[in-house]
Amino acid sequence: MRMGIYISLVVVCSLLSFIAANTISYKSGISNLLATVSAQAGLGQCPPCPGICTSEGVSASTSLGFPEDCTVNSCNGSTIKNRVVLNGLGRDIVIISKARCTYFDNMGHEQSCGDVEDQTVLSNVCCPVGQAQPHYECNFGGGCDLDNSCGSDKCEPGVRFCPCDAGEYSPHLECDGNTCRLAEYCGTNECDNEGGSCGGETCGACSTDSFCYWNCYPLTACFYSQCD
Image (cartoon, rainbow, N blue to C red):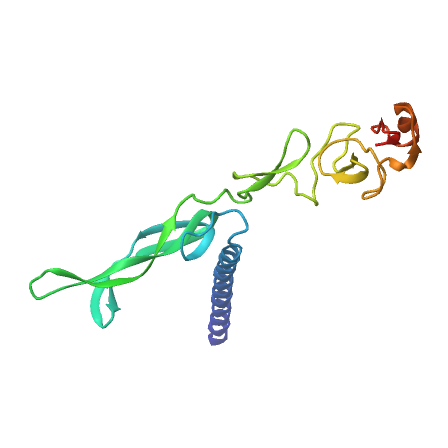
């Protein structure tokens, strides 16, 4: 009988240890997640912090706490601070603010010791989770523009390009004067090698535009006896 009770106690203790460990692990995971979000401040989801921020891109709720003791420059009083609870990812910012530390004198008049540190929630000032401000959008010509509003990147200059209609490409090579340049918007290739020559002396002397068309590049023409 005693052996059975002993085994039952061991099982119960093991279960309690498992639950406690997993609860601590869960809370630790949430804390690490929120710490990661706070560390990513400035990546675009939230505007620049208007002071000292403790958390950004979070979902936070706030309520008034209970009176508590406070001391400012040897002046003892009491204060009521905001109670801030973090509930995961969201659109809020938690910023350092101030609360008054006060006491009552012998006449029953409230006097101020000064300010103590508090926290305030700025609600819905960030973009929705997964979006950023500014972000990149594709324009009608297939170029990648910076858009100063909330959204997700549709492109990224030099990295991810906008889709084009059939027969056009982004990026593509086009002639800029006599030089072949890379253009990051939709168009057709006018030359072969970025930075290379795009007509002129390498195509030889000309007398007609058709010579340049067939012997140089289609969009060049004959100017002053040279393809350009």
